[in-house]
Length: 429
Picture 1: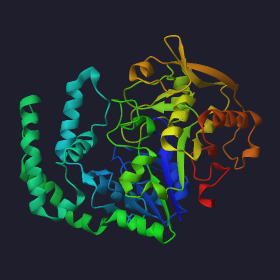
Picture 2: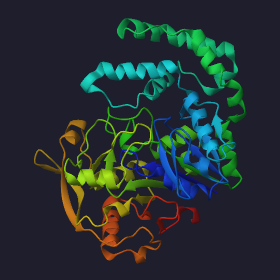
Picture 3: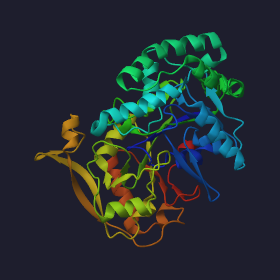
Picture 4: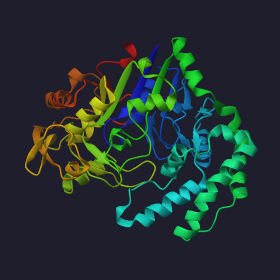
């Protein structure tokens, strides 16, 4: 029996989908515990590229049952569009299951998300505009719509009417938008009820029963540590807890059942959206990482901001998540660039910080303190054994390991499933 958590160790887009895809073939269940269709993954299988937005990467596994956990917010329109797109490409999505306790994204959540971002102007958070934040806000305010509500029309209507009492006041009086009718929302949700019904389960019971039976469960977090609403660069964060602790809450699996916490970290750093980013590059190397690394958001199409590896963030993520291992991705992107800077600490107004500064203001003003290492020129994309890497590549990985707080147990040398060096498989412990 194993319960493994996969968590992004930076600001997202680290390659969690690839890690999930590789390990997903060895487990019985893959559960997504947080996020919505704002938390995309790119997975390459047999040369085919799949861009997943709401569905867990485990949906492409041949054997695992993919589950959207109770901590996910589900946009039904996006859900079925994504399912239909996979089926059209020959994938099997019939095993997908959804927790009845997951919350649903309503069209009015998306409307509010977009108008509120525009209203904030230059103070905007940089959301995807997909209604994720407003849906989580309703969840916490106890006026949200859960998946199970779609099977009781009376309850669903009561909840929609209650929500619209307040939201229409905001839309009409604050944002000069039209009011939304409850009948319109009822038609929207009930249009998906029959197709949704066979997918809905008691996910918490199912997953814990599986562990009791000695089966293997993989929890695939969306976004990343630095976007966590509690532990990230607030307020430039997501609306959930994409950390290891959040995976327990969003799946219903208790913390004592976790056997490994795997942090996914790029060999450099990227970020999408607004917010501080100490190692961000505005020169030719930023353009190089963006172009060669293919750094474009899966969900938004926005170019990712790029910078050098930040070991301060990696150490922080290792501490917050209790990482047992790291999965280092995109090492191949650094081939042939001469020298590679590594951020080992920050300078904030003349004071050195080897760990994360206490305040957001300090972090915003942090300047990276670098050490440099030589890059390698050899093609590493077909290497499958760590000992076969060029010495300079091994030195770089070993230095990151020393700085980051957990062993680099997996190393990605290309986008494909088979382009991964495995040094210590968490599934074999």
